[in-house]
Image 1: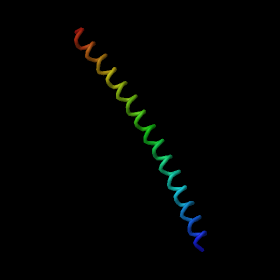
Image 2: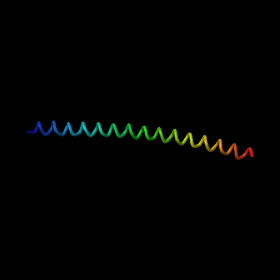
Image 3: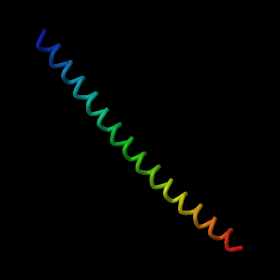
Image 4: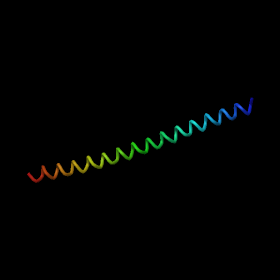
Length: 55
């Protein structure tokens, strides 16, 4: 029974590690998306400021 418990715990740990890894990737993707959107927003603001300053 001890071996079964050990295997069960190891399987549970492996499943949790997989979930953590997937969440980490998702977080990384969200950070990259936010960074890109921020960059786009900054560029749009610069363009709008240039238009306003030209008038």
